[in-house]
Image 1 (spheres, rainbow, N blue to C red):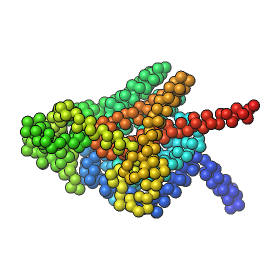
Image 2 (image 1 turned 90 degrees about the horizontal axis):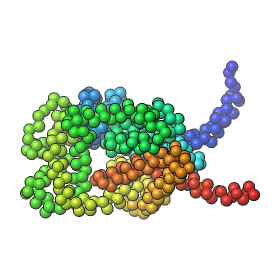
Image 3 (image 1 turned 90 degrees about the vertical axis):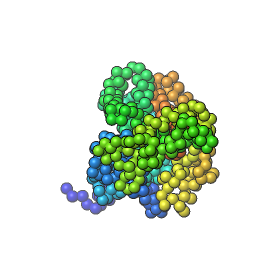
Image 4 (image 1 turned 30 degrees about the horizontal axis):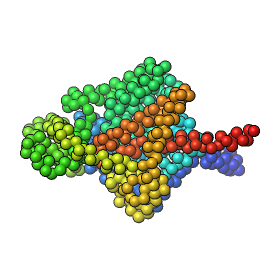
Length: 486
């Protein structure tokens, strides 16, 4: 039966009305509208070519296209998953890869907004509050900037948020398959970003085993396959490179960059042989270190043998950097032990940078479009939402809000435990653990970009804020409800 135009029109209007009255419809509308505005008005475009051939975290684009699986297997400087993603897209879209990356990152950004909204609902945040906070996250300049940057700064917070949502579902259903999905997402993060180490995965599993006292068997069973995948990665590292950790020289390099050893101490250490001078600048071409490393035999594996990538950038996956780590790291750790004050002096900077809005990130996410209107708009948003009065300075709302939200989260977790609301209690424990973990690693280890690393848990702070606002709203409306009932 054919429908007339008169019949179709009311149906279309009814559908549009339902769409814009539903939270998901509003999130979708504001997501699309904001991306169009950022593109047309602020000229924000996706940054693929600026990162693909130059970032040391990435394998040579030519190897990603023509020797992907072999290169991933012999990758020691980074976990393999993000480079696998890059290689698959380059293979499938050798010419229009930039558009493919942009579309995939748009989908990730949209998925992030929906995941955050549903996570807040699962954490019993009031629906209206959940929607408002999600919309603020969706249209925030930092969200859009990172969404247009070919790096794992966008997928990492997405999958960390997904892991919390999967945890809520698993705690409600207690089904084996939901548990496998939960721990699979956690293992995915280990394979994606070396910030989330295998030890982080083990701690998360241990926390859930401890908290889920009545369901420990299903937790252990669910974690087995993802745990074996994580162990397989460590076994591969040990078997091929003799090192059980992933990206060992990255840890050394970041610490050396972070700790500024005075020149007079450097000279005395170099003269005594305690810390060779060439170890203090590890991120250089491997040929510079050849006189000190001795002969580094060729392996016949391009990703381990090439000194420079086809783009001219240094290949930090060269096998010689592993030898550099073996020589320099023990000497550097002894130096830190001997001169701890030089390390402790860096804490002020790391803590201060932690409270800087994520959009202010040393120009890493600022393309040529970050001028004029976009810069002014970002500064205005950071002033209103973060309390940042000058660019590249702390946001005072963050300085006050992050500790208060963390304390409030601990109190809410305690109250949830007392009231036997175990789903909310365990979920809060997981969220708080990840906030503590990220904060600890950022303050103790990272050399720069502390605000960018913090971005991964910003969504968790938003969830805690939503829970606090919901509790405050309930407290304010309770006397009114009592008066109306009497």
